[in-house]
Image (cartoon, rainbow, N blue to C red; front, side, top):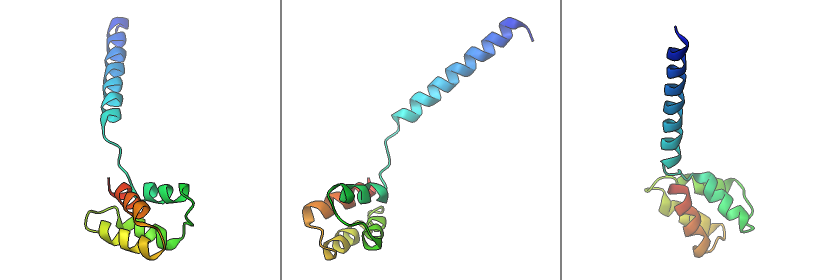
Length: 90
């Protein structure tokens, strides 16, 4: 393979890599139960298995109301439990 062909392939590879990186950066971030747990931890709540299980429920649209109820039973006020569960499912 000639030097010019090698350079052309290298340039093409760089362009493909840059395009893939750009597209990956444009994708929306996925929130998870970890975002829910982190939100509550930042607000001073004790993180235990009850909070983790509630936040896991919040990852699905069907489980989100159960997340809110479980966090409420653990003493998390509505302002924080709703926000946390919404973060789990975004």
